[in-house]
Length: 249
Image 1 (tube, rainbow, N blue to C red):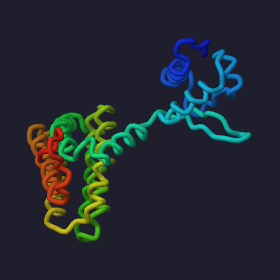
Image 2: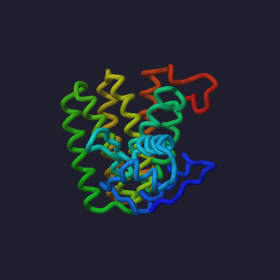
Image 3: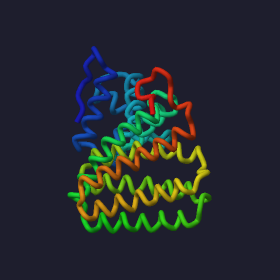
C-alpha cells in the first residue's frame, strides 16, 4: 500500500500517501494502521517525520490516535468537524464578519431553497413540517425558549439544504449554521415579536417550497436572512469593523 518516501519532502509525502489511501478507499473507517515501527520500515523513513505526519492527519480528522499498549492510529470517516472548527475560529477572531456570513447566506441560501423546491421529496416536506411544529411549540413558550427555537431554526435551514440534493450545499450550510448559532446563544432575545416574525418566515418558506414556488421561496429565504442580519447588527454593532471587507451592514 505504501512506498518509500521522497527524501526531498518526507513529511509531505507521508501525509499524501496515507491520506490518499484513506480517500480512495484502500483504508476504510475502522481500519487500524500498522504499528509505527512497521510504518517506518514500509516508508523507509524515521519516526520523527512519521509522527508529525500522523498528527497532521489526526488534525484533519482522518485518524484517531490513541496512546498506550493498545493504542495506535485508527482510520476515521472523513467529516466536517475540522473545517467547521476552522470557520468558527475565523468568526470568533473577526477574520470573517457576521456581515460577510450574512451576505454569503443571502445569495446561497436563496438559490438552495429554490433548488429544494424543485427536488424535495415528500419525506423532506414531512420533516420540515415536523420541525415547524417544534418551532411553534417554542414560540408559544415565549422568550425563555429562544435558544431551543434557534436550534430548530438551524435544523430547518440544514434540512432545506439537504432537500436540495447536493451534498456540497448541505455540508457548507451546516458548517455555516453551526457557527452562526453562537450569535443567537450569546444574545438572549428581548423582543418576542422578532421570534414570532422569524417563525412566520419559516412557515412561509416551507409552504412555498412545498408548492414548488421557486421564485417565491428564493425571495422569502433572502428576506429571512436579512431579518437575521438586521437583528444581529442591532445586538452587536461592534461586528461592523471599519475598513474590513464585508463589514458594512
